[in-house]
Every structure is written in structure tokens, then in C-alpha cells.
Length: 129
Image: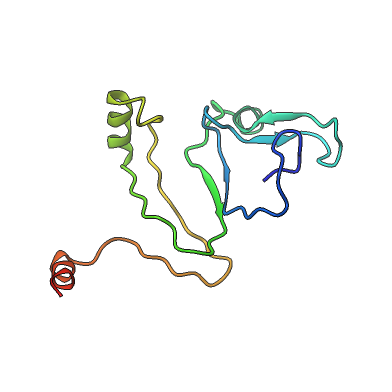
């Protein structure tokens, strides 16, 4: 979603389930460095803004996501940092970055989540029924 319709036009009748903010080269977020309501306001890539305001190289070690979950989401599995680096080095066309993807959920409304799997014996027992 965007306050700047020329950069990211929104369709008011559409539902948006995710808002991502990060510094990945394939789709860095933008920061308004002027008045958001001003059509001539300047924008900087988030990484450039972070480097100027906080120092360092301008990257973020995380991708910030805001989710609006109306229906169950698909299962996602992410490698740890060491495996992510190895996979990226070996298969960069498939694993496009070397970062792990730790996740944290902070629910603003009632929310149920499944984390992990049941013991294999229970899964096998259910499948046998």
C-alpha cells in the first residue's frame, strides 16, 4: 500500500493481505523525506535512509511484514542463516538472498497460529484412520 499513487497505485475495491517493508534489492521500500501529502515530496530507498539516519551499510537484517489474515495462510519453512548463505551461494537463481527469515508475530486482534509439527507417531496414527 502506498500514500503515493504514482509509485504504487492502489485499487480501493481490492483486499490487501500483506504489506512488506525492507531493503532487498529486488524491491526496496521507499521513505518519504518530505510531506507525505505533497505531490512533489522526495522519496529515498529505505536502505539509503537507514544508512544516513542510523549509520552502517543501510541494510536491515529483517523484512517487516504487516499481515491482514482473513483466511489460513500457507505453511512457510525458512532455512537458518548458515543454510541460507550456503543455498544462496550454490543456487542464487533459486535462493535470491543469503538471509535467514526469522519471524515474530505480534497480534493486534484475536489470532491463532500453528508453529511446528505434532510428533510423527500422532501424524501416522491420524493418517492410518
